[in-house]
Length: 113
Length: 112
View 1 (cartoon, rainbow over the protein chains, first blue to last red):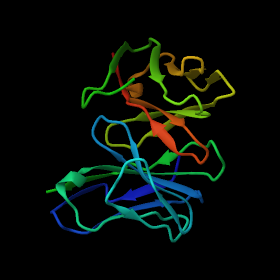
View 2 (cartoon, one colour):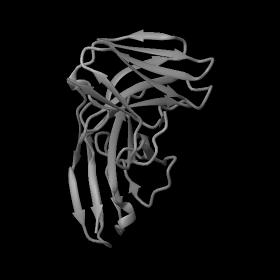
View 3 (tube, rainbow over the protein chains, first blue to last red):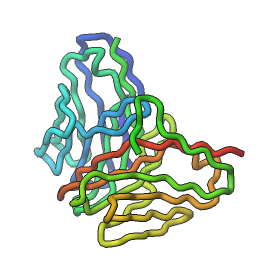
């Protein structure tokens, strides 16, 4: 069982607020990822990191930003939330070797009013 | 398969029967493939993976088949149980670095 945790699980908040979604893993994985998933749809990669101080944008453009100051922690921030940001955000991690499975948290369901 | 909005392709299967879920992948250079199971309100859960140098891999009650000629991946679940009801996603690793591309999901409904 993977040990990757996301908080909060649910967040309903007004437009214009600054939001930080937390993601932590206790497996010592070098690689971490953020995905966006709308209900019933596939996952889209929005950010990834291959290690401390390394962050890259994913395949789907996102107004969010990420940071990786510690191996175990990969927070995602929205400076000014908008209704179009309403979605589920999933965090994942994997070991540093190639061709390793990604292990997912249970996600944050974000609703912007 | 591809999902169409909220109308996921759905596979209804009788409890105890075998299930086969299919996935067409896009990149002939992909070298690693994973099947995930996602239950309502949870993140995707790893089921089984396969590398491109193999065409079959078996786990507990699950088998993944890879046909590189037609870029097709399938997941077989033996003796399907109610706990197998979920959405199943395939994912391919298109390049070095463990970046996965996910296909649209398939919903499996197990009838008692």
